[in-house]
Amino acid sequence: MTIRGVIDDRILAKYRELLDAEDTAFYEVEHAYEDGDGNHFQKDLANWREAMAAKLSFLDSCGLGLRSS
Picture 1 (tube, rainbow, N blue to C red):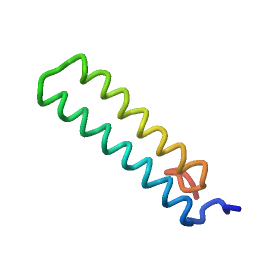
Picture 2 (picture 1 turned 90 degrees about the vertical axis):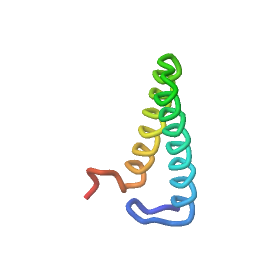
Picture 3 (picture 1 turned 45 degrees about the horizontal axis):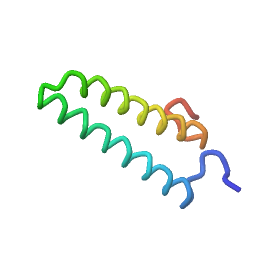
């Protein structure tokens, strides 16, 4: 059982997974921008936003969100 606000190995593993997904998505945004590929840029930007939202939602669910006290 995980206690809200307490970091354990499961939380660290899931956070690392979500952080890697965000990093990969940002990499795609960066390259679409550099290549001037507007269609891919918009799609990749949406994917990056989804990855960030998933990471932040996970942190909130663990009691570790930005507004958690």
